[in-house]
Amino acid sequence: MPFPVQLIRSLSLGDGTVSSGLVGRVVLSVGVIGTGQWLLSDVLHVPGGGLGVLAVAGGIWWLSRPPKPPSFREPASLKGWIQRCEQVLNQFTELELALELQGLREPRETELRRIETFDAPLSLGVVATEGSDLPATAQLQTGLAGVSSLDLCIANPLPVTSTCWSWPHDLQELDVLLHVLPMPLRAADLLWLDQLPADRPVWLLLCSSREMSADHALDAVRCQLPERWHQQLLPWSGEAKDLRGVLQPVRQQLMRSDRVRQATRQRLLSDLHRRWQADLETLRRERFRSLLQRSQWIVAGVVMASPVPSVDLMAVAVGNGLMVKEMAKIWNCSWSADVLQVIARQLGMAALAQGVVELSGQALLGLAKLDGSSWIAAGAMQALSAAYLTRVVGVSMADWMALNAGVMEPDLEELKRQAPLLVARAAEQERLNLGGFAQQAREWIQERNGWTAA
Image (cartoon, rainbow, N blue to C red; front, side, top):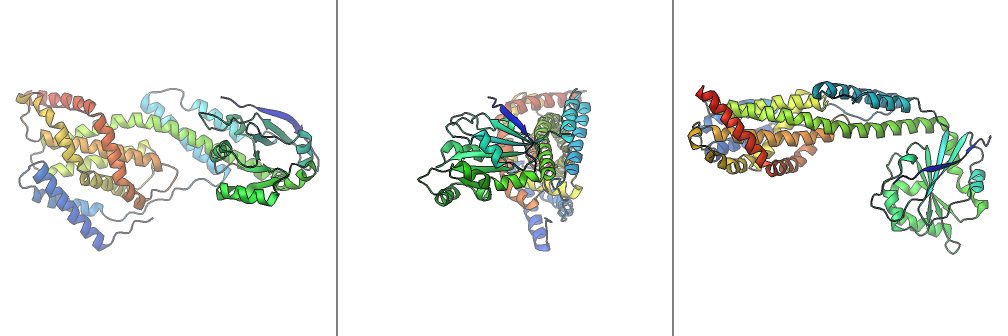
């Protein structure tokens, strides 16, 4: 529901590095060897699996070297935000080519140029919820006298009942907001305040009754509001003669017009960047699904054709490593190969610890009954379990990259804490779609049997 603002008049009022020690590496190696022995001997019933695990352990030990994660920081200047948005535009161009789509870059580039050259007059938006009394326009003009070339905009009242507590888009481009609040605060007032982003410059004009002193009203509000608002409170008795003194902090901020306008452009670019990232995520997931299906069956094919049991885990590790590198390109993650290896290994270990392979083996056992005569290769079940493991690790990796790509440094310690949850969520998501995976597996098995017969 739109809430247009009303322009009253244009006022010209004159004057981590992950450290890994020797003990940690020993513990990691012992865990990998034990898990691999259980995987090959107890789950997949492969004789002599211990030697294969020892062979793989050497490779995993090498992957355990501590990486130096790069630093990702949000731009701190207007120029930096423009450059970041330009990079996102280039990613849309790449996706246009990869997904054979049209019209991804052009409208977004037009929007970026509009914000880059945004030069509207300095503006103050006055907003309140339904049932709140706003100061008279003449009182506001007097209270803001001294600010040059200011557009004073009065917004339509915000509803006190709503199914979507989202601030009107018309207010987004206003430089500063003056939010008029009645005392005591109502639930709707708190809900609207909770939806204001932290980078939005907002002053809270508190209208207290004559029976309540300004100091008492201020103390009451401070108990209700988060600390971010404590320095933005402007208690007002409702008397016209007091309003100019109350609005002094607002005038001081607006007089620094160049700084205010630059902050507005940066805020608009930051919001634009967030929206573009959401659009990119949808397109990336589409491309990722194609990569995931290809990777899982490549891993399955290597495992099924492998004459040596020890190659199974190596095939999964190598296949996942190649998939993760492709995923880094899709999500534009300029992380080093070491960081990617650590993340993939952490998620893979979490998947093994949660018994993803065992669960997938039980769930896919029914596929063996599809065509008994074609189920000849002893490694078919291992291949399907490896494909499912690749699928779960890939989905959890995609979730992690979506949370970290391009906006923040990948916290590997936080990954250790979140890995079980990411894997569990991915396993549940893919288990819900097990029918689709079973159909893909059926087609893959039939294709493999066709090659064997040929």
